[in-house]
Amino acid sequence: MITFENIRYRLLAIDTLAISPGVTSVIGPNGSGKSTLLKLCAGIAEPDRGTVLVNGRSPRETETGYVNEFPDRNILFSTVTDELASPLRFRHTPCRETDRSVRACAETMGITRLLDRNMQDLSGGEKVLVALAAACISRPRVLILDECDSHLDADRCAWLDAVLRASGAEYVIRCTQQMETAVEGDHLVYIEGGRVLHAGMPTAVFPLLADTPFYPLSWRWPV
Image (tube, rainbow, N blue to C red; front, side, top):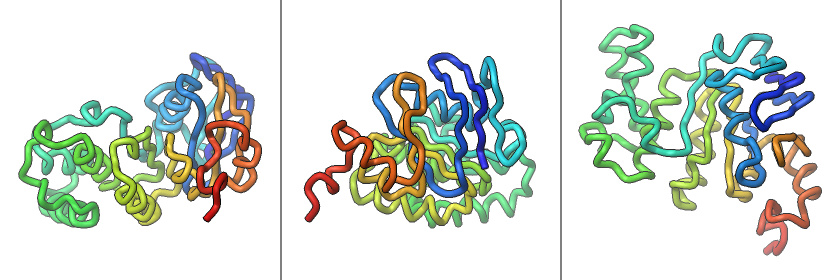
Protein backbone atom coordinates (compact mmCIF):
# COMPACT_ATOMS: atom_id res chain seq x y z
CA MET A 1 0.00 0.00 0.00
CA ILE A 2 1.15 3.56 -0.74
CA THR A 3 -0.04 5.75 2.11
CA PHE A 4 -0.23 9.51 2.57
CA GLU A 5 -0.76 10.83 6.09
CA ASN A 6 -1.19 14.48 7.12
CA ILE A 7 0.50 15.75 3.96
CA ARG A 8 1.16 19.44 3.51
CA TYR A 9 3.26 20.40 0.51
CA ARG A 10 2.73 23.39 -1.76
CA LEU A 11 -0.95 23.28 -2.76
CA LEU A 12 -1.51 19.76 -1.43
CA ALA A 13 -3.37 19.18 1.82
CA ILE A 14 -4.08 15.46 2.17
CA ASP A 15 -5.12 14.14 5.56
CA THR A 16 -5.13 10.51 4.47
CA LEU A 17 -4.96 8.58 1.21
CA ALA A 18 -4.20 4.92 0.52
CA ILE A 19 -3.32 3.62 -2.96
CA SER A 20 -3.61 -0.12 -3.47
CA PRO A 21 -1.52 -2.18 -5.89
CA GLY A 22 -2.64 -2.01 -9.51
CA VAL A 23 -3.20 0.82 -11.99
CA THR A 24 -4.32 4.09 -10.39
CA SER A 25 -5.42 7.09 -12.45
CA VAL A 26 -5.16 10.58 -10.98
CA ILE A 27 -7.52 13.16 -12.50
CA GLY A 28 -8.68 16.69 -11.78
CA PRO A 29 -8.54 20.29 -13.05
CA ASN A 30 -5.28 21.87 -14.22
CA GLY A 31 -3.30 23.22 -11.30
CA SER A 32 -5.04 21.01 -8.77
CA GLY A 33 -1.85 19.31 -7.54
CA LYS A 34 -1.84 16.11 -9.61
CA SER A 35 1.79 16.35 -10.75
CA THR A 36 2.86 17.32 -7.23
CA LEU A 37 1.17 14.19 -5.87
CA LEU A 38 3.06 12.08 -8.42
CA LYS A 39 6.37 13.66 -7.46
CA LEU A 40 5.72 12.80 -3.81
CA CYS A 41 4.98 9.19 -4.83
CA ALA A 42 8.25 9.04 -6.76
CA GLY A 43 10.34 10.64 -4.03
CA ILE A 44 11.29 13.53 -6.35
CA ALA A 45 9.76 15.83 -3.74
CA GLU A 46 9.32 15.41 0.01
CA PRO A 47 6.42 16.90 1.98
CA ASP A 48 6.88 19.81 4.34
CA ARG A 49 4.72 17.88 6.79
CA GLY A 50 3.41 14.34 6.97
CA THR A 51 4.59 11.03 5.55
CA VAL A 52 4.46 9.14 2.27
CA LEU A 53 5.27 5.41 2.50
CA VAL A 54 5.46 2.67 -0.12
CA ASN A 55 4.87 -0.66 1.59
CA GLY A 56 6.17 0.94 4.78
CA ARG A 57 9.29 2.43 3.17
CA SER A 58 10.23 5.87 1.95
CA PRO A 59 9.69 6.44 -1.81
CA ARG A 60 13.41 7.21 -2.07
CA GLU A 61 14.14 3.71 -0.81
CA THR A 62 11.85 2.19 -3.45
CA GLU A 63 12.75 1.30 -7.05
CA THR A 64 10.70 3.76 -9.10
CA GLY A 65 10.34 4.60 -12.79
CA TYR A 66 9.15 8.09 -13.71
CA VAL A 67 8.02 9.60 -17.02
CA ASN A 68 7.69 13.38 -17.11
CA GLU A 69 4.79 15.15 -18.81
CA PHE A 70 7.23 17.04 -21.06
CA PRO A 71 9.17 14.61 -23.32
CA ASP A 72 12.42 16.60 -23.46
CA ARG A 73 12.68 16.63 -19.65
CA ASN A 74 13.09 12.85 -19.67
CA ILE A 75 16.24 12.94 -21.79
CA LEU A 76 19.63 12.33 -20.17
CA PHE A 77 21.69 11.00 -23.09
CA SER A 78 22.04 11.69 -26.80
CA THR A 79 21.17 8.28 -28.27
CA VAL A 80 18.17 6.04 -27.72
CA THR A 81 20.37 3.07 -26.85
CA ASP A 82 22.21 5.01 -24.15
CA GLU A 83 18.92 6.38 -22.80
CA LEU A 84 17.48 2.89 -22.42
CA ALA A 85 20.68 1.47 -20.96
CA SER A 86 21.20 4.25 -18.40
CA PRO A 87 19.10 2.81 -15.50
CA LEU A 88 20.98 -0.49 -15.73
CA ARG A 89 24.38 1.15 -16.11
CA PHE A 90 23.73 3.29 -13.04
CA ARG A 91 23.20 0.00 -11.17
CA HIS A 92 26.47 -1.41 -12.59
CA THR A 93 24.68 -4.17 -14.48
CA PRO A 94 27.17 -6.15 -16.63
CA CYS A 95 27.44 -4.88 -20.21
CA ARG A 96 26.20 -8.06 -21.89
CA GLU A 97 23.16 -8.25 -19.63
CA THR A 98 22.46 -4.57 -20.25
CA ASP A 99 22.68 -5.03 -24.03
CA ARG A 100 20.28 -7.98 -23.91
CA SER A 101 17.84 -6.05 -21.74
CA VAL A 102 17.94 -3.01 -24.03
CA ARG A 103 17.15 -5.15 -27.08
CA ALA A 104 14.37 -7.04 -25.32
CA CYS A 105 12.80 -3.88 -23.91
CA ALA A 106 12.98 -2.09 -27.27
CA GLU A 107 11.28 -5.04 -28.95
CA THR A 108 8.51 -5.11 -26.33
CA MET A 109 7.94 -1.37 -26.76
CA GLY A 110 8.08 -1.55 -30.54
CA ILE A 111 10.98 0.88 -30.78
CA THR A 112 13.79 -1.35 -32.06
CA ARG A 113 14.00 0.81 -35.19
CA LEU A 114 14.87 3.80 -32.99
CA LEU A 115 17.88 2.33 -31.18
CA ASP A 116 20.47 4.03 -33.39
CA ARG A 117 18.63 7.36 -33.50
CA ASN A 118 19.54 10.58 -31.72
CA MET A 119 17.04 11.49 -29.02
CA GLN A 120 16.68 15.07 -30.27
CA ASP A 121 15.63 13.82 -33.70
CA LEU A 122 12.60 11.92 -32.36
CA SER A 123 9.02 13.11 -32.37
CA GLY A 124 7.28 13.89 -29.07
CA GLY A 125 5.46 10.55 -29.14
CA GLU A 126 8.67 8.64 -29.87
CA LYS A 127 10.45 10.39 -26.99
CA VAL A 128 7.63 9.33 -24.68
CA LEU A 129 7.94 5.70 -25.79
CA VAL A 130 11.69 5.74 -25.17
CA ALA A 131 11.19 7.38 -21.77
CA LEU A 132 8.60 4.76 -20.86
CA ALA A 133 10.94 1.97 -21.94
CA ALA A 134 13.76 3.47 -19.84
CA ALA A 135 11.41 3.70 -16.86
CA CYS A 136 10.37 0.06 -17.23
CA ILE A 137 13.68 -1.57 -18.10
CA SER A 138 14.79 -2.11 -14.51
CA ARG A 139 11.35 -3.48 -13.60
CA PRO A 140 10.59 -0.95 -10.85
CA ARG A 141 8.10 -1.58 -8.05
CA VAL A 142 6.45 1.81 -8.71
CA LEU A 143 5.86 3.28 -12.17
CA ILE A 144 4.80 6.95 -12.36
CA LEU A 145 3.43 8.49 -15.58
CA ASP A 146 2.60 12.20 -15.73
CA GLU A 147 0.20 12.69 -18.67
CA CYS A 148 2.51 10.90 -21.11
CA ASP A 149 -0.58 9.66 -22.98
CA SER A 150 -1.24 13.24 -24.16
CA HIS A 151 1.52 12.69 -26.74
CA LEU A 152 0.10 9.40 -28.05
CA ASP A 153 -2.74 8.63 -30.44
CA ALA A 154 -5.77 6.53 -29.47
CA ASP A 155 -4.30 3.26 -30.75
CA ARG A 156 -1.06 3.81 -28.83
CA CYS A 157 -2.99 4.69 -25.68
CA ALA A 158 -4.88 1.40 -25.86
CA TRP A 159 -1.60 -0.43 -26.45
CA LEU A 160 -0.04 1.45 -23.51
CA ASP A 161 -2.57 -0.08 -21.12
CA ALA A 162 -1.40 -3.58 -22.06
CA VAL A 163 2.25 -2.56 -21.66
CA LEU A 164 1.60 -1.15 -18.19
CA ARG A 165 -0.19 -4.32 -17.10
CA ALA A 166 2.76 -6.38 -18.31
CA SER A 167 5.45 -4.10 -16.85
CA GLY A 168 5.73 -6.04 -13.60
CA ALA A 169 5.28 -2.87 -11.53
CA GLU A 170 3.31 -3.42 -8.35
CA TYR A 171 1.96 0.14 -8.54
CA VAL A 172 1.28 2.10 -11.73
CA ILE A 173 0.17 5.66 -10.97
CA ARG A 174 -0.70 7.84 -13.93
CA CYS A 175 -2.01 11.35 -14.27
CA THR A 176 -4.27 11.61 -17.32
CA GLN A 177 -6.72 13.95 -19.02
CA GLN A 178 -8.22 11.01 -20.93
CA MET A 179 -11.26 9.79 -19.04
CA GLU A 180 -11.61 6.79 -21.33
CA THR A 181 -8.13 5.81 -20.14
CA ALA A 182 -8.92 6.48 -16.50
CA VAL A 183 -12.03 4.31 -16.57
CA GLU A 184 -9.88 1.28 -17.51
CA GLY A 185 -7.75 1.55 -14.37
CA ASP A 186 -8.19 -0.33 -11.10
CA HIS A 187 -8.41 2.78 -8.93
CA LEU A 188 -9.24 6.46 -9.39
CA VAL A 189 -8.19 9.53 -7.43
CA TYR A 190 -9.88 12.87 -8.08
CA ILE A 191 -8.04 16.00 -6.87
CA GLU A 192 -9.33 19.55 -6.80
CA GLY A 193 -7.69 22.55 -5.17
CA GLY A 194 -4.94 20.39 -3.68
CA ARG A 195 -7.37 18.09 -1.88
CA VAL A 196 -8.44 14.54 -2.64
CA LEU A 197 -12.19 14.79 -2.98
CA HIS A 198 -12.85 11.24 -4.20
CA ALA A 199 -10.87 7.99 -4.25
CA GLY A 200 -11.92 4.45 -5.06
CA MET A 201 -12.79 2.22 -7.98
CA PRO A 202 -13.72 4.04 -11.22
CA THR A 203 -17.24 2.61 -11.04
CA ALA A 204 -17.67 4.26 -7.64
CA VAL A 205 -15.96 7.59 -8.31
CA PHE A 206 -17.12 8.52 -11.81
CA PRO A 207 -20.85 8.64 -10.90
CA LEU A 208 -19.91 11.37 -8.41
CA LEU A 209 -18.47 13.38 -11.32
CA ALA A 210 -21.43 13.01 -13.69
CA ASP A 211 -22.05 16.78 -13.86
CA THR A 212 -18.40 17.67 -14.49
CA PRO A 213 -16.06 17.53 -17.52
CA PHE A 214 -14.43 14.52 -15.86
CA TYR A 215 -17.16 12.05 -16.73
CA PRO A 216 -16.30 9.55 -19.52
CA LEU A 217 -17.97 10.28 -22.85
CA SER A 218 -18.68 6.57 -23.30
CA TRP A 219 -20.78 6.71 -20.12
CA ARG A 220 -22.67 9.81 -21.25
CA TRP A 221 -23.65 8.31 -24.58
CA PRO A 222 -23.29 4.52 -24.37
CA VAL A 223 -23.39 2.66 -27.64
